Image (cartoon, rainbow, N blue to C red; front, side, top):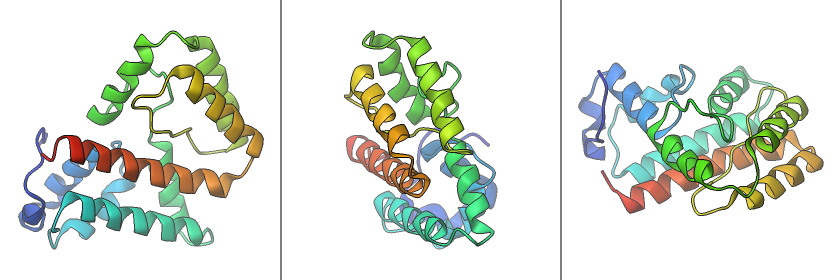
Amino acid sequence: MPITQLPPAEHLGSLSNAERAAILDLLFEPSDAMHTLTDMLSGGSSSYGAMIGGIRSKLTRWADNASTGDSRLLDDILASHPRLGEKKVDSQQSRAEQAQLQEDTGADEEVLSKLNSLYEETFSGLRYVVFVNGRSRSVIVKDMEGRIKRRDIQLEKYEAINVRGVSLNYTMDADPQ
């Protein structure tokens, strides 16, 4: 059942697992691994911000404990993010952010494609994740190059987790439903 508008956060507990999974798909990138977190929504929530914060905390714990099976789930969740500049984007939020990049001519698509490949080669299993809204391609390209040079996969995981929370909170502040 596709969900196009978020129900009040306090009603999350009354929804089926499939409906909660659809909400996670709406807020995050569609991911079977993300659906393992539907139990976090079973009690409802005081707000979407609180729910997003709880999910961010859980993902951060998974990143902190790389030896657990949860680290595989985390890697799958982080890899579900679309490549920067990719044409086919599943989530509404990423489509809106990436539309801005399609209009910006500060760096061409070939540069983004090469950097995406280099990033994924450097950080096996991850995709580059950044808060795009309001940033030019050239600024994003510099950030991506710097993060590749840094070569710190653990920090990349934390950045990806935090970017998701920041961009979701930004979206929720701009449009609470």
